[in-house]
Length: 95
Image (cartoon, rainbow, N blue to C red; front, side):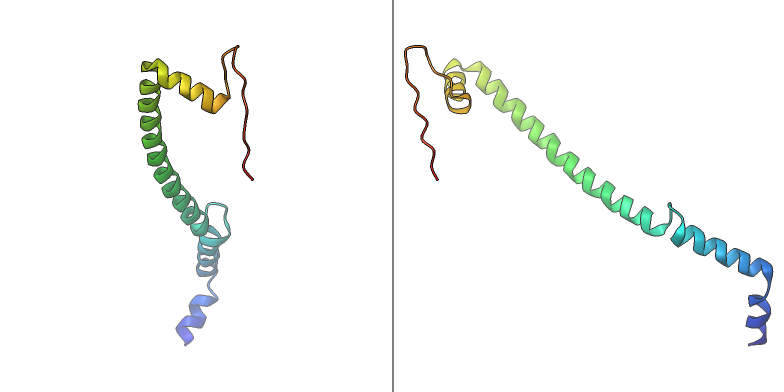
């Protein structure tokens, strides 16, 4: 017990312990912050893979769409409600 009291009253031990507590928990780059940022990095990397796959899929669909004029016309009519000048367009909205 006397050894603990001897070391706890030592200036260098107290300074070192307070520095370690400061660096690990209080500082803006402490352990909790680093753990949270690492978790966020993992989440963003998984999203990156998802968006890479989505980008490949969209490029393939775009290639098919612009390669076939009938599909392009169908897409324009459905998505952007385009019509020929001699046609009437009716939009049915379901509740």
